[in-house]
Length: 494
Image (tube, rainbow, N blue to C red; front, side, top):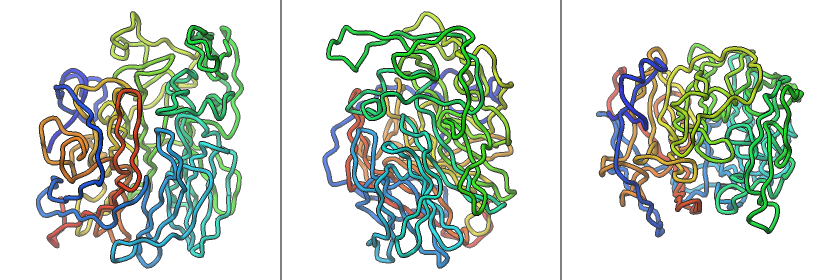
């Protein structure tokens, strides 16, 4: 199995984070223009011995999550939106045994980012690029009822989840509006992310009162036709608004960059933990502990941060996890996080920090976009108690430079040690990457994983082809796949 990392040296891994280590890869990466149709070839995917992978449904448009009803039938949601500003229609699909699908419900507030079946109904996280995020309940006859509305997810990141806890409550998350706390012109790119044109006053919202250092950042002003126009923006305020030293930004709920709990029968969510950048995947371990994957900072915008990985957290209620001044428990005002073209590392935005943040369980590759996760419960599939994580893959150079493609696979994490290992990855064709880059029929952009009810198979949701050509993101409809990984033997796994 192969490890990944994008920054110097194996020894620093253990010293810096005490969680999984990866190897440095090198080489230039090129992005070819995708020519449909997408090839599908399970033989192009490497797996451990005694496992196989099969395509269960193909031709999906931007699928993001899978769940199972009481009979074990798989259901997939299609997002209805992709970076690259492509809007379609969010849909809940029942996957039939022959690989066809039946539309159960449609929505109007994309993207749909996650789905879970619980007590006879489907619960969907609506990302809310337009109108704000929601948690909606969908009955098997397709009736859609919002149960939480007005979540602040109009920006870079969305409403994610949900997951059902051992207490019967729904847990979900809301990502931040920005890359690193400051609204910048990177949120006004018609070829990748352009939410400023829809919500020009939107910004990050802290969950508790924060005190600013008053740092403001000068950037081009995309709101005017003159390319030489500039403006100044501070943290936790709208674009074009400066801040002052010791300025207090009042916290309020719901906020951004946080995990929430919705008790059975409730419509007002409770705050669980905050200070995340983009807490994407939520899952409970067999012991009932909540784990969350977090997408780390990018090297973009008015406050670029270099070399921040993605993280796996064991969520402790009430804790602050570091946004916008820490990455994986480490302060960002260190040389490690300095972009190569800058004279100084990023500076703190907050004058005071709520508390020292904890340390992550595991570190994933920089820009790997480690997203949906689930836990194996053992049995025939094996790896009981280990976390399986879908890695969507980098969006370089839009999010920052990489030395070779990062992600595009499914990894497993031993949560007792933090060691991360490949589980399903495209067979090595040089420096790796999505199947369309390699010229094969393997994985493109795994975005979510879910074990079926009896833990006999791992389903992998593959978002499909999304090319990145410079700053231009080009998603391709009808290229998504639902894969199924099963053990070929009937023994207790490792």
